[in-house]
Figure 1: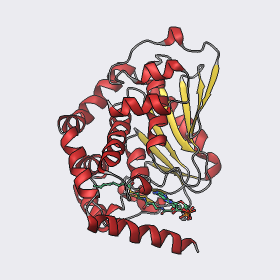
Figure 2: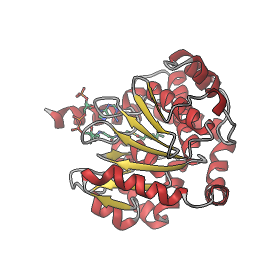
Figure 3: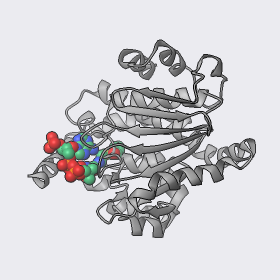
Figure 4: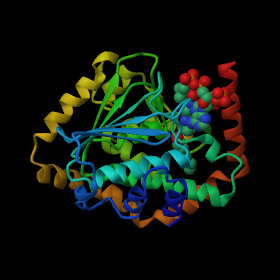
Length: 303
Ligand code: CO8
């Protein structure tokens, strides 16, 4: 309910979007009657823009929240509203997520949402993180992450929830769940999502050491599915999308659900406890100190 209230408070899209955001995305509802009829529709909010091509049924979501597309409460709220709108539009069958910023796909969770905040705001923030994961991981659409920059922690999680990951082959970019390097612990559903993709042993090593992989290493362990030069990224994502969309939708969706439902059910059944765990963990003095040290390191590295 708190997230829904947040949707209402921060909604920068039309009243229609606010209404759509209050219903679940797990079953698709036909809302095409109220959606735009033009071939290509664009929706822009401050941190996300969506370009939907109705002739292909594919939407491209551009994350455009400088400097690093960090996942703040406002960002996550806009993200979920846009995602839900697409999910409810029967004509939208595929979603490509990419960044409009140079060098960064997403820097992961906004550390400022976890540092020096009240338990209440930490709790509200964590519900929004859960919501983003639940919506993306259970999406009926084909989802492809077109990773055109670094993607640590929550940014990696977002990419991992997609059906397919294509990454720009630039050794300066990195991807991984590096939480332990911040002195924090990736929750069980981050861990499960990664293990479902790269297996138990790779996940154990990656999480324990907080490993960030360059694109070649990420491809080797299966963290991403394909590497391409920067100028081929979107064309490759679109070609891959066409291949996935050629599979009968109901068969593909049931298969996706069969593969992912146990992981989704695990969080759904423990959602409130997971919020409480996060709040009590993140507000501990020792964890706050680790976050402060990490923030200082980020600033120093920049100087
Ligand atoms: N949150 C908030 N601010 C950030 C973040 C972030 N995640 N990342 C970077 N920033 C800020 C920097 O501090 C800097 O701020 P300022 O301009 O005020 O100095 C600004 O963004 C630009 O950063 P950089 O100069 O470092 O930008 P670069 O383009 O050189 O590098 C990177 C981009 C590679 C993304 C780099 O910024 C980076 O490595 N960032 C840190 C990423 C990270 O470690 N994220 C982890 C977040 S935690 C998470 O996602 C999961 C938590 C799970 C919690 C579980 C608890 C139980």
